Amino acid sequence: MNRYIVAFFIFSFLGWVWESIYCTILDRKWANRGFLYGPICPIYGFGGLLGLSLFDLIKAGHLPNMNWALIFILGFIVSMILEYPTSWALEKLFGARWWDYTDVPLNINGRTSVPTSIGFGLGAILIMKFLIPLIDKGIALLPGLLLDILSLILISIISADATLTISSLTDFQKYVASIDEAFQNHMTNIVDRVYSFPNSYLHNVIQRIAVFKFSERKNKIAKQVREKQFIELIKDYYKSDIIKQMDNYIQHGNTTTLEHCENVAWISYLINEKLHLNADEKELIEAALFHDLYLYDWHDKESYQGNHALNYPDIACENAIKHFEISEKAQEAIRSHMWPLKISKIPKSKEALIISFADKYCALIETIRLNKRFGLRH
Image (cartoon, rainbow, N blue to C red; front, side, top):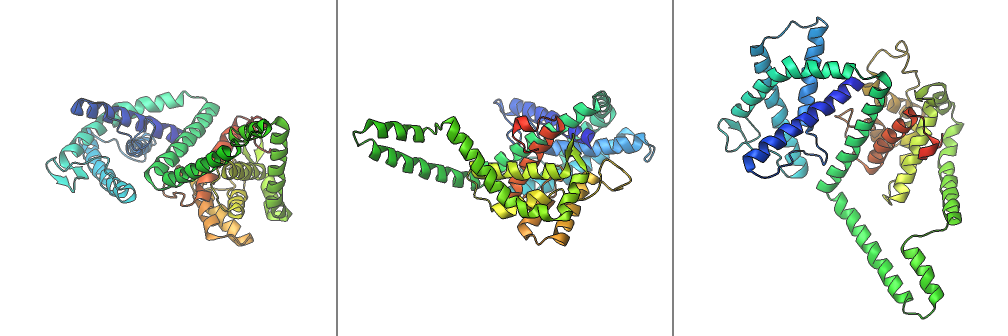
């Protein structure tokens, strides 16, 4: 799985390089062709993964070798299959087109065209015959631990990138900006009123509040208050034997599944509080504590025979529904917390987005075993 994650980012980056260079030359000005902020084009990543999957099947003897003509035809067809629905979905979601083939002959609603698909077919030959074998050899040289860490870092980056991109393309960013503007105006009015008094002591107090300079003692008290409130939110769940069972399995590094879930709940709680996102605390903590409630050792292949990374969110959600009364929003947050690895399960709420980000942050820190240094509880 980590091999495919790293390969996805390599193909996405190379696709971004190709698109940006081509469009820059064509338009005679710099063109950033990525949908996200970062230098990647995910559509190339998915196409590359399909090619890598075929390469693996051929290498394992499950499929016969493909000649150049067959590769060209597959590349031609797959490019149309990927381009049309992707263009349609982006336009429906964000009201914009990232490519338009209206002026290209033999186009289909401007979303895909025969000439461009011919180009992708020729590119598929280059990718299957030269690029994929080269990438496969390069990834095989990476040590297992480095591959684990690299894949976690890359998933964390694209999760944050996708969140920022979607926020900038929707009303969420405007909503946050309006809150910030109202707060700043309110603070300005308070400061102006207080500075109208001659008392210099009050001046200093307000100045400290305005720039948020708290003493170390006040910061310590604030931390204790947050921890006390958090413990109040989670304490009742620890009375359950089902929850305690998660402590029998290792999740990342030397962190158990139960410790990992509490870490994710804690980081989610802090994100919600410090960024003033106003997510529902009960549903947020509940979904975070239950998000890995699959109750088996994923390191032992005999414990579970399926694809753990893609299937366990649904298993955890079913267990949570079976043993606890959880809301539909909490269920959705549990099922979607592996996004974008599980690309079909997109987070649909603030709670789900927070947990998805917190889960990847905690997984990375736990894998490199620096839990306490980076603010985790265990």
